[in-house]
Length: 302
Image (spheres, rainbow, N blue to C red):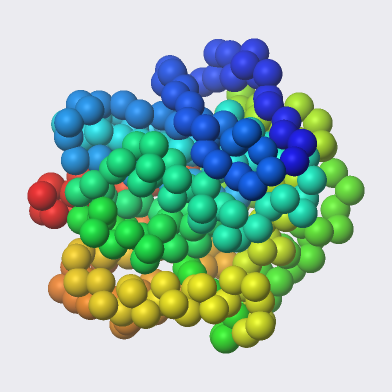
C-alpha cells in the first residue's frame, strides 16, 4: 500500500486550531502500519468524549466544541479518519473499504487509547464507523449522541439527495473539499476556514479517501458492508445506555434519520432528543448547543 502524508506546514496557523496532534500506528495487512492523528485534550483520567468526523471533513470540524468540553472537565479525543486530516492517506482508492475504516478506528480507540466509559458523538461517516465500533465493543461506551448520520444496510431506499451526491463524488474531475463544506453549512465560513478544510489535501492524489467514501455507503442489500451493518443493528437494538439524537433542521441527506434510532434503540427512550439549527455539518452552525448537549449527556452517564 502506498501511503501519502500531508506536510506539517499545511497545518500551520489554522484559525481557531491550537491543538497539538498526537499519533498512533494502526495495523494494516501488507504494511508496517498506518499513522492516525488525533487530538487528545483535557484531564487524561476523565471519562472521554470521542468526537468522530465524517467525509470530507477532518477533526478541524470540532474546533469550537473541544474547548467548552475541556473547560467542563472532560477529556476530549478527536481523531482524523485514515485518508483525512493529518492521518496517512492511502493513495489507491481500492485500499479504502468500510471494514478497513472500522478496523482502523477500533485499533485506535480500543487498542492504542484503551478508551472506556466513553461518550461518543458521531456525525456523517463518524456514525457509520463509530456505531460499528460501538457494536463490536459496547462495554466501552457509556452514552452516544448521533447527529446527521445513520448506519444503512442497503435494505431501504436511500434519499435521492444522497444518490446525487454519490454520483457527483465518483465523476467530478476535481474534488472541491473546502467549497463542499461551505455548501453543506448554513453560516458563511471565512476564506481561512475553507482553506483549513483544504489543508490536508495538497493535490488530487491526496483525496482518494474522501472520493471513495460515498461509494462505500451500502445502497443495496448485497453490498459488502450490509451483513456487518445488520449485525451491528442487532447490538444497537439491545443497547440500553443513553442514546440521544441531535439532527439538524436543514440537511436533505439525513432528514428523518433520527426516527430510526429513537424507534429501535432501547437507550433512546426518554432521552432529550433535539433538533438543532444547521446544515449537514451542524458542528459549524451550532457548536455551542452541541457541546452543551454532549456535556449534559456525558455527566448523566457517569
